[in-house]
Length: 100
Image (cartoon, rainbow, N blue to C red):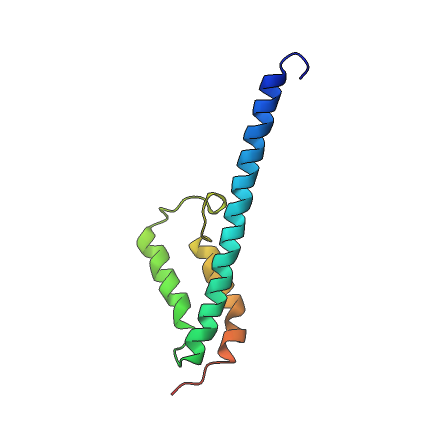
């Protein structure tokens, strides 16, 4: 480091930039998951079956044919993560579902 301080600084700044970017992507994915959960509740309150959301994302995943970037490099959760999260949150959303 003492022999090439500029190189050490550049490596540090690049590492910091990559780490910051990955952190922001994770933050964005968390917002997407929160939006999915709220969406389930709102659709249930509006009288739509929130369980239909799982099938929707399964169809979206099949249509994509796995052509998505790795989740860690994306602002959105993977289809698999999104489907799993919807299934886990479903009991809460169903509390608001009153079929008409």
